[in-house]
Image (cartoon, rainbow, N blue to C red; front, top):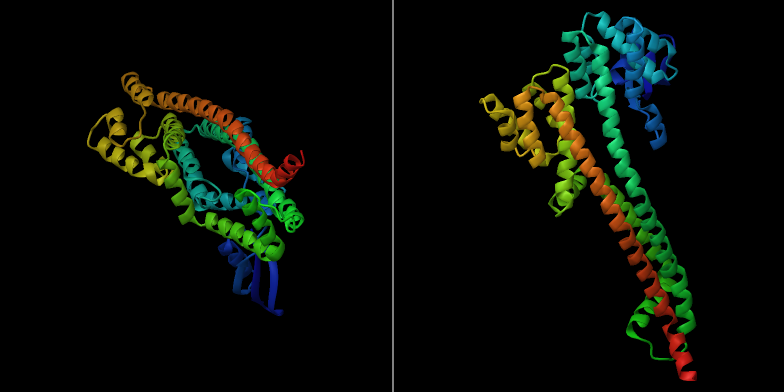
Length: 395
């Protein structure tokens, strides 16, 4: 990350400089090594695109690390190689930070956890920690890469299915805005002196046009203020949490949101179980992935398992199952392949979610097109209604 630092440097006095560092502490340490006294450190905020470029490519890092480990290099040699080839300063400094921590005698998992959740999620560090006890780091990282790819695939399906409806909403809003903000005021001036009795809906529409003509700037500023206010409100965690609660309470949608979260939850547990982590520890590690609506159920499940209840009974007590999941959990208890059963549950629910998203978009898109078409058609008919009446009276 880029920082603007004000420091008192020997022989140079107070200077202001820009520097790249992983965090504020690293920037301060580097300057203190040069004998400078740090006065202030301010993070330079990047734009949205710059922030995306600065994000650490965790999957690419993992894939390259797997390739180097499989080629016979040690973990330290692999990290040194990655640091040498890395062209981005932020990523190179992060890998060098890992190497420094490991040279102090700490394990790789501790070095990952020390960098913070921004770079390495707790699930990633937990996967590495489990692999350190068995010595199979490369297979463990391969499992994580596969896990993340599957999660990303589901997210991409949902995103791609929502693109066309969003385009329809955007284009429809622009067309309706053009009619109400430009066309209707022009018709209002044409009909102003017509002196004819108009239908009340036409009169209401033309009154809107007259208001736009008289106070167009204020109305435009009010609309921009409303849009900005909505954007600021949506950026607040409280607002997003309230919308999430509303979505969970919505019939039909809430149940599928629950299924989506449970699929990711089961997939995460299955990956950790395959890596040798006990199920109670795995539950504690992945409970943070759940929303507030399901997180309390994870705590109930952990307590039930500590009391000696079976996995299927504990999950049912915490309301973290579906009918299919409950059956497969019982099968996993009998066969002893619980990690594999967790993966199968996740795959089943991912496919179920994909089918529902496809069905929903197929139904929603034509309904949305009908609504937009009817709205635009109604505005046009109301505008031309006086012309129709005039033509009828001439006949």
